[in-house]
Image 1 (tube, chains in turn brown, purple):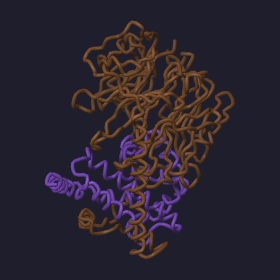
Image 2 (spheres, each protein chain N blue to C red):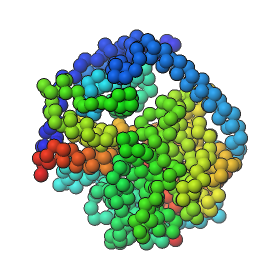
Image 3 (cartoon, rainbow over the protein chains, first blue to last red):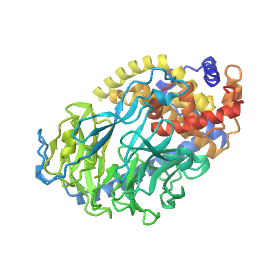
Image 4 (cartoon, each protein chain N blue to C red):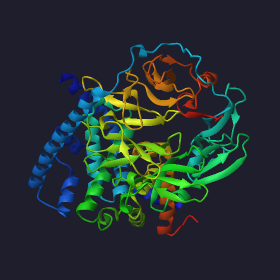
Length: 431
Length: 161
């Protein structure tokens, strides 16, 4: 046992209080939190006054939330509904105008950890993922890397010569299809300044010269979420000032909670980024934190939210010609009950918002080479198993694709599609 | 209303079993994270209360309650910092039991690093579970864990060599 683990084990000697009666009182609504009293004793006011203020704020917040939600719902009828033939069919029909994907496919496979893995000292070695590569028809599948090190697939370089991945040590690397290491693009420490507490992923620009990523920082050090771009030839990092937020994204209690950015996505022409910001306050009328879909120029100018926040947009994807952005969104059922997940698309300027599905379980849209969409849907009532489905760009001609069939996904022109098992995204080589 | 009440009673019985098995460990983890036994008690009690109120709508109650307790304690810490600077760890409570130097060193880490380190070294959770319970992803956890571990070892004199 190392020294840190031994020191943490001393915590087991601390006697924890029995709070079960306190839990019961809270459920019955007869008590308020002790933390509130603690904070007040360090700061302002007496409890009755604070409670009245809190009650008044709550009433105002609820009223504002209802007004905001109501006004945004009023805008939703402008969404173009799905076409009449959007009901799913069971068998895939691949129209002749699809452009099949050829070349190679990189994907992630779950594997057991190495036998000598020390899960205490090298925990990343105990997450069982590795990169594999196969021909587009599914043949000649083989490991891309010799070591199993919890590798995360980012995608192909735009020239198709290498696969970008995040290794288990926090370095973004490029490896050739034959397993030769080509270059290191950067690490957490080189891409992000010392205030950084993490970056989620990187996106390589269409011309291969820049990386874009979302970085988070601790609240103590200033901005807590920002989109940044790194020039790969100089290492120069540029933060898009217009994308910075100053809350930590752990709650969305108030209007000041600006949310935390997800990794950005490059437009096909490399001039703009699309990204989602989650955990925006105040919560909607279902008590759910809002999210917003933004488009911003790569110089940080012209930041704009392009869909109503009560759509809760996630997972944006630019169409190959850059004319539309598809995303999935959590919308309320008509009776206001549980949310449903459906596919939408919108022009990058925020016009022509279209709802493409209304089955309530479609998610994670990705464009094919021919401009159709591949999405995932749960298999029957088993929400943990998903299948790929394909549809036209307007939501018509929905059909289920064979599960775990690389050749079928290549045939419909996948660029990035769920494989295997819908758990990870496979990436097709640019041609 | 009857259905909701029945669900609440059933859920409460199951959750008390979970509480008896897991709440002490959760409390100590939140205490190590927050450095304040009142924040830890409030966060754990409120997390379990919220779990009961949600009835059977929570798929994984054990994971959910940890996530809620850390979220609540983090919010309480931020409010405490905003209203009045926290001068130091809750030494009166832990001096007799735990490692005061460790808890004092933990206080010097940013929230994200401290949470990752506590959940890894004390709660003994794998990276993906830590990410799930902190509402972040594995990459951010690994970065926070790496930096937090390095900083802790500096602060504690690097006894691991």
